[in-house]
Length: 351
Length: 80
Image (cartoon, rainbow over all chains, first blue to last red; front, side):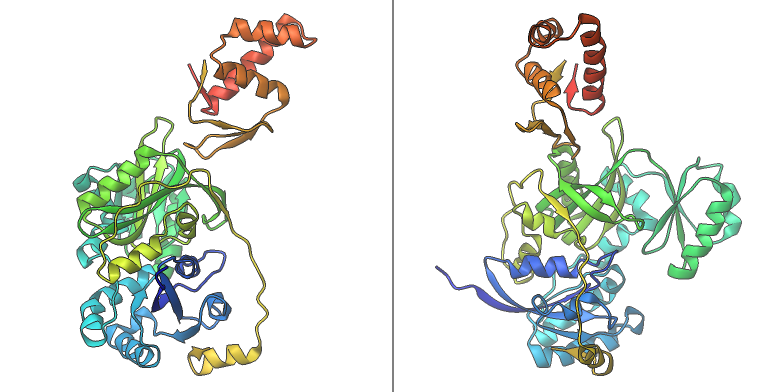
């Protein structure tokens, strides 16, 4: 039997809350890797991200500067963490931090030998909510008609192009369904104050929501894709339970999208399946979803495959996955010594 | 009417549609009817089987079978 390769992997997205980040599921998948023996370094933004205190999964944690601080602050911090931990691979899991990590990808490799496996800036920009309609046209994927608006003055004219209900989306996160013009105004203000401009207006499509967690090798090959339907949805629209589907058409759409865009890295595709069995792409998240551990449960360890590709290995595509596997989330109260909270709050590190 | 090929049905009457992710529970009579449909029995054959096994009159069977088959089709478990 070959010994597992030892790796130190830094992972962000430790906010395992009711609207969870993907960090903890990614870590669980890595801890269960058959190829790697991983030491996990948590990268956190807040002192109350639950992953900080999950010592069975996260070996040591470090606070990192908010994305708004820019790349200089980030690389300075990563440099320090690397000196302490000798990081092999970083897996960033927040949309908002990806731009900084993408800009630093070459420097991190050249200066520290730290590897990542991220989408390119063009791929990242192209799939942005505000560009998704054009993305669909380019890659032959159905996307509900949408447009960006920058001011409430543009709202009345929307009724010439859209019919209610209308989806009002924030730049990065959150979406609301508006049934009248007053609600569009209200959601516009709510989302702008939180995420800034633009606001994306999208035609509502009736159907059931189905999602795919997938990973591309950057050369047009889909290494894995597992479709899932949410069975229980929280008030924030997040899956609290879901089940893997036997849906060849959906997997083929995901493969086609990855082939056409040459997607590099993990991704989540969100679709609406209509009563006529048409699939409309609602969103592409440029990183693993928080339910990515289901893929591992179905026989496709996407985070492990990502690490292999980051290390320069050629990974053969997964051929199948188990259908009818469910995930059910739960909440759990960690009892934390105040000393730990003090340590991460004051020193920015926690062992 | 036929039960879709990929529908999973357990002995307990639990039905899973792997395409939609929907799951259902049926009572023993429903389970029996689904099995008869899987054996490609037509409505007349199913009617004779049920009438011979259970104390039910024909009009009640007709009404209940119509409701059940509509439910199976709406739930994408069966198709014409």
